Image 1 (cartoon, rainbow, N blue to C red):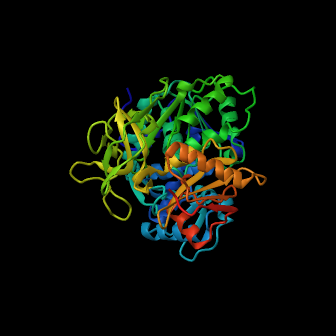
Image 2: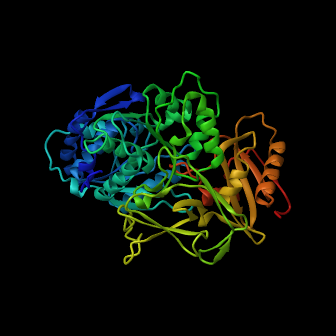
Image 3: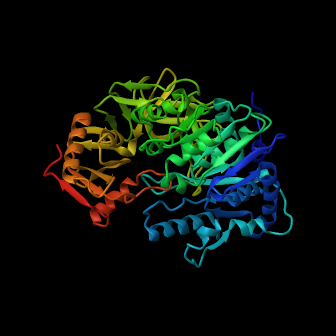
Length: 536
């Protein structure tokens, strides 16, 4: 049984048995105890910035050292979203300036390589992680004061900063580890960006805490840069094989990317005991395809652990248990309350994302067994956003999310977001179901088709294509047929863009509203669009 800890620093403090961190892109290995000691110089630097700054977190040695120092020093750090591929530079810089102004910070700490690429801004000082670590002097260590501000995805609205005291992050980590149950000799391997809660809290900080004296008593943390994974998706599984990883994590889309090409038969994934899948809707087809592709590499599909969480709860709220095969369930069409009573026409079929973690609760609005809005409550759910607006109900501490789903046999099933429910000729459907319908169609990039509701209630689907020589007209016809068969609606427009051209958040979610605005304004770089006179 894990001990209750009061601060994040106590939760992740190095144990008596050494843990090693491997930074693959830098070809560096460092002992955790030495990194922990080195990071304490940040206490002196923190005094220069009134113990607060913004950060662009990257999977580097210097960044991790800075982060550990900030936790021990009791800083308030604002984690800024990294620019997504294809992001509009002007929009991104305006977002960074707005966040820094609201957080009242004028210093942004970044990797030295990224600092050289950033423009000069009058109101912001960019400083490298290495520079902060070279500070000479002493400062006070006040781990009780540490606060992380992390942002919601911004997929359907502007990102919001969530205030997370270190004690709440520690509570979430302890709940995650209680479900995962780290073992002696564990190796956590991750490519997930530290700028995202799944990479930072789910893999790095939980991984470090899992190697403490309370849990596995030593182990290894293996970090790849996200760019390395995106250039070569199989590099993640190659690292898992090389280091005999026992724990890893991934969003749904990355599972598709990792197995889109044949994997070397020399890979051996028999040691993977836990593969957490979350951060976006989890698809049965993806899990089955991933497990089938990895079966010859001695991967056991019971390692797959679908999970559900959100920035407002630090990270995780529910998770499937390791060593138990994930399951799928279907709910009959049932009403749920949003701003009005909404009836989902098709039964919702979804992968279970497990039972609530220890100390957490999940509630569905409406009748038992019905599809409804998801509310969550637990020790890591933040009380307010950075702008001061409330997150939880002040009396009950419940947080009403924008997600809908149902509970079966105590396990949560997530259908989608209320913001992503489309009204098509009187029928209400989830955008994610429309996107899932075209996932098997050859020629489109896996996980890169976004359903949109255009002005005039016209349903559109924009997809990234795999190559230049695709017959787009034939592809559009195949996608229309797939959506009609599975969802019973016709697409008003099917459009295609090149790889990397769909507007995405820093955490890999579609920016639907922004994409609609670009389409209306004619600023989205389209290869071709096929329209129909009506969308029946």
